[in-house]
Image (cartoon, rainbow, N blue to C red; front, side, top):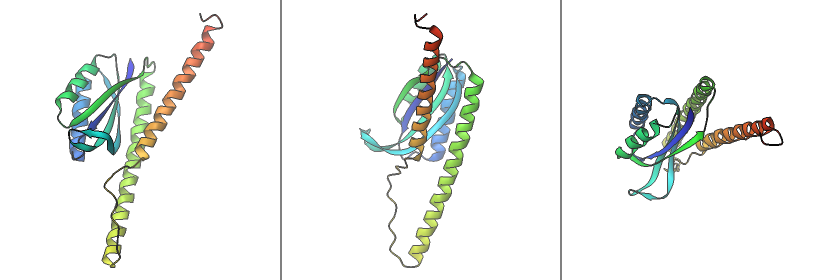
Length: 185
């Protein structure tokens, strides 16, 4: 089986419930096509490099899954038909995943960590809102946070995860080279 990553950008005004419903629908498409969904990385709302369908921001999500390659076409078809999807890109992350169970266990751990960080972030944002409201009630001039939603923490986590995968891939390649010997056999 191969590991794939389909990253897609959703219109920014779609609610969290709408995004969750979309992800559930896409996971269903993958499962019906015989793929094994692994994890979803919600990178948050980001400013787009250029305007797409009159949107200057988009909500970025990545869906990781294992498949032989047949489910990719079905998933991309579903993404093309959904009007809330601005853009998508599918990348083959790994050519051959030998230990599928270990990969699924690692994805469960990553999902758990992401959810914990999201909960911590939600608590922190609630505390900041409460502090702003208290300052406003005390008559202080309070500056509202910008609506950029450019929280770099999820992207950093994703970049670190990708760096880890690249490092693991290089190690495997080095190990394969060592096994072949000097003649390349």
